[in-house]
Image (cartoon, rainbow, N blue to C red; front, side, top):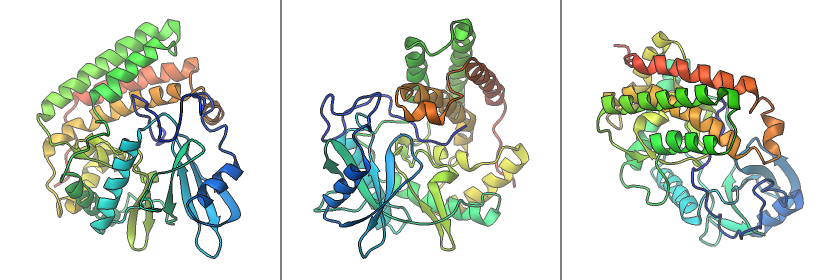
Amino acid sequence: MSNQPNPDTTPVTTPGSTPGSASSSAPYAGLTPDTVLDAVESAGLICDGRLLTLNSYENRVYQVGIEDSTPVIAKFYRPARWSEAQILEEHSFSQQLLDAEIPVVAPTAFGGRTLLNFQGFGFALFPRRGGRAPELEDPAVLEWMGRFLGRIHAVGATQSFEERPALDALTFGHEPRDWLLAHGFIPNDLMEAWSSTVDHALDAVSRCYDAAGEVALLRLHGDCHSGNVLWTDDGPHFVDFDDARTGPAVQDLWMLLPGDPAAIAQAWKHLLAGYEQFRDFDDNELHLVEALRTLRLIHYAYWLARRWADPAFPAAFPWFNTQKYWQDRILELREQLSLMQEAPVRPAR
């Protein structure tokens, strides 16, 4: 499964945009290279003309050269996805983490504002940070990751998001299922099988949540896979809080796990050895791992469908919305049904 970020289930207007300012089928049609450079210079910087497009589908992200200085990263938010309040809440969370000396990449303020606007596009500028993918098979790396996630969650638990949505069975399961059924993406001959399988999967998700009981909810990174971690000799930098949401702590941990049950048990041991130096972990949340994986799978298909009119998506994901794609999704969810019926993998002792 891809690790690309996923959309909010209820799109809203990005600051500075007006109805019709960006077509939902081509939201970045007006974001030319000159527009990107002009936007960056509107913040008071002087560009040297160098522009490198970075890998991102949900938003548009560029490395922009700055005269007599290091390049900056310019992130242009997808129009009509997040509200201004929701984006600023993400920025505030990142800054709180940075203030706590946690290595995250937070947006830079210009004139006291981190969310800027140019020709209807909301954007933010970030310092450039280098790094490589973390070696998650290394126990020391896992423990290091666990320590920093424990610190992130300790800050995340100090207050609640007021504007950003939750990551739960409604927003990542039921609403995506209903939208896909209502918009004709499922082939007619697979409709009954897909719908029935998703319904059974969501029932199993509900049972997993029941087994976990009442777990604490907090502010999360939300999309904490290895692609959103840059590793250096000084440890990790966490980037891209675009999908920050409210949810259980285990959401930021399970995507770092390997696939084999024995390896998972060892990974949990090392992750939690680091995590619990800064925050207790509720073992009941282990019941949610396969449920959250299932919700992510459902939501990922919905994300692709929601973005399918954007020309970048058919070019990047040509295998989506084929007969085989939906057949594979049915099989995938049936495998998840089996996994959700099993006892959760627990840390090796």
